[in-house]
Length: 246
Image (cartoon, rainbow, N blue to C red; front, top):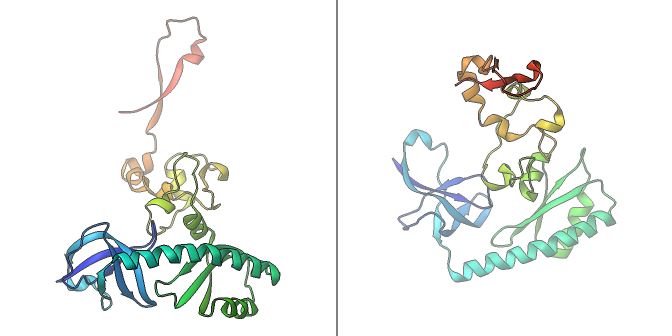
């Protein structure tokens, strides 16, 4: 058995598991951890728990310490630096006349690397841009192309339901969503009705998919027409309503 804690580096980001190394930790604690790309700052989202050996697919990285006030200050400074780097990135992209959209900028905790996230319709030759950015920031530069769903997750917004986007608030990973799920739920197949702001099928189509599959093979026939007597002068044909079965 291994003792692990789950850590997120961004809001609604993927949860990564680490060895707490006997450091007493609780949910929401800020921590400094060792990762494949260096030292990073994150927050505990899954408290200490034990998992079986078979669930560990690769050696666990370690939690180095609970974040100190100095660490929190560095994290805040990095956040401010990211905003300035974003503005510079926009200027440099325009200067090189590249067909790409800058979405986000991220500093590693130790500032050994800056990651620029962008979207583009195709491949982009950004070699000169990387050289230009490296000369400005004097550190390693990585440009990472992402998809439209990741863009929506990073930027956030409101869905058709009026609530904040699921992907930007609590969904750590994207799961496959198909048009078949909309059909099983008797939803309109109008793309405008079942697509999110990213232009892809809404993630929430997945939430009740299993329930519909278990309920009469996709909930077929779960709605029927039942007649009722009207005490008004309405046309009898208007006195027919679709009522879900109990």
